[in-house]
Length: 196
Ligand SMILES: [Zn+2]
Image 1: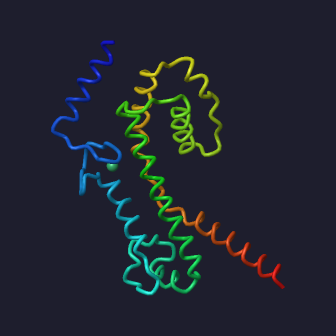
Image 2: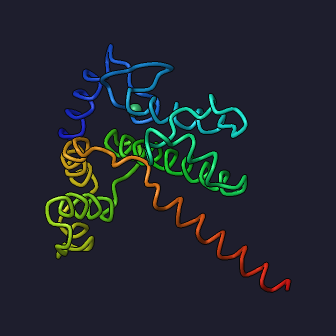
Image 3: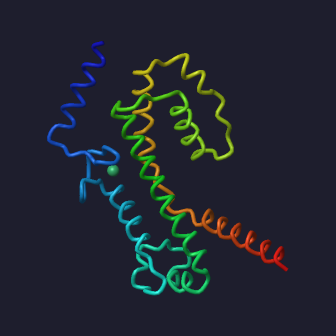
């Protein structure tokens, strides 16, 4: 297909002389170690969180600003060791999940993995939610499957991804970590009651 050849030529010209981020294939703003600024920031967050040590407060770098400027004190005073680990694991999990999301988006845009109708549905729902949080998206993935073939889906995905790129990441969601800690505490108190 001429469209494919043209696309390949454009992609080749675009990526020539341009280093792509090794996670998300973003061609702009390579910062360090082969990552774009956005991915590098996530990589640094994960590395920092893995080094957090409660006994050495200077290691508590890149803590989410939950009760800034007293985050460090909060972490040291409020959590038990187990709870601290739950928080750390959730922080790392969210950063890894965001990295993975960026990587999958880049792979789909580059045509390295196929774009399925649900991918486009997810994009449309995401954009619609930003505009009207409670609005229901009425066309489903089946509609997309019927009307767009694989290459058309990739192009559509690419166009929508341009818009998605402009949506900032909301950052670490501390509520999820606190929910996990609450569940842990509830389980613990049940066990204590059972032992009595
Ligand atoms: Zn990147």
